[in-house]
Length: 333
View 1 (cartoon, helix red, strand yellow):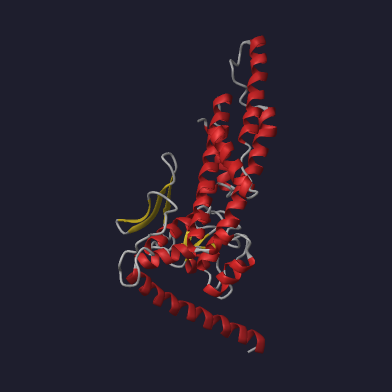
View 2 (cartoon, rainbow, N blue to C red; view 1 turned 135 degrees about the vertical axis):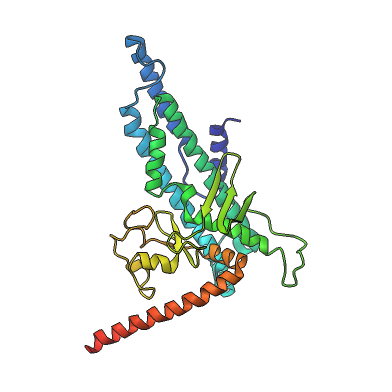
């Protein structure tokens, strides 16, 4: 079965359950076909272009890229929003979960297995849309004999609308590995019916002491996430993802943004840059990676406990200095 038909069937099946955005794969292919037919007429006159349209094409550049960009924004926005809701529900207290389930109309979410299935659906949605975008850009470059499709992909990565760069995909990967830990009860015995997996081939590995979150989403799509903080050069503690996609320890990020931990990253000046990519305006929308924090805590207990004690003392010191300053400012002393 051709991918276009497979994608259309998948999206049609999903839209019957819920209204979700997707890539207009068939519509974008029609734009490229119009381009190819137009160039064929030109080639029959001047014998210059063969069966491909020019590298600078007003038909494609004025319609194809703006349409694809809008669709990618909608896809990533929907994925991020729903992954956030799912993981917040998973980490919520039992009382909050009960309230959420009572308010919700979807009975499928009323169980632990329901949350896992929602996670699998989100992963499948991210994967198939990522493949669809890659294939349509590859087709664009083939027709135009150019590399503008790859250049566009680089551009959207800088705009943070590449779905495989989403911090919520990283959280789902950590969520999957954490689920495997629930196969054992408190006594260490393996449960009779372990929870189903979100991913195949997803793992946290330590290569020469350096942590790496790795996952093979398919035969052609693999995601590797380096979990070493580039500021303290150690495994990220209390990890946070900036809007540029780079992951740091929370306190390291506060230090880089020149803010106190009491004020938090939301108060960072927009001109402050990411230490790695030097991009501005990356702190205000930072995402706390709670599932990843749980995973790393389980994997490196001794390191985590030692780091927790060190950071607790540092946070108390910063809080003391902050409130001393506030008191002096208020009293004028």
